[in-house]
Image 1: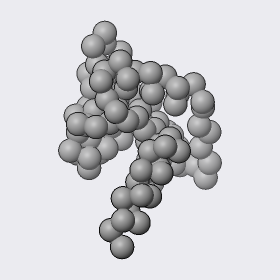
Image 2: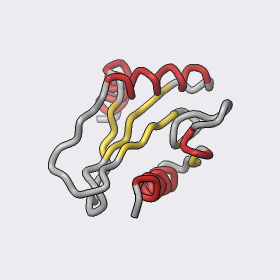
Image 3: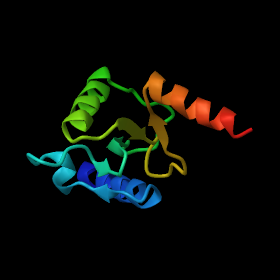
Image 4: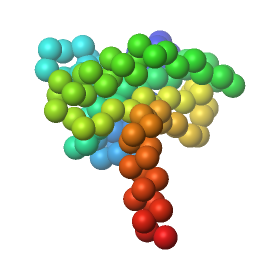
Length: 110
């Protein structure tokens, strides 16, 4: 399976899990950016083509996704990643301010 197929599979899973939509051509169009769009988020997805124990996150990915989210009128951006085809979990990288908001609402519920 080539890299594109691994990516499409991951993006489809993320979109389904989050009630979002995959963007056409992984956001390479003039109007749709990112890989998955929800009501509140623009999500950039990254996956490994082989199972791995580590994953490198690049600052450029985060900055670009934040800028594209803003341009699309989304309040939030996230980077979703996993450790390869056999991974049963996906992880999300969010900004500190968004994490603080999440923490506030979670603590308010208790």
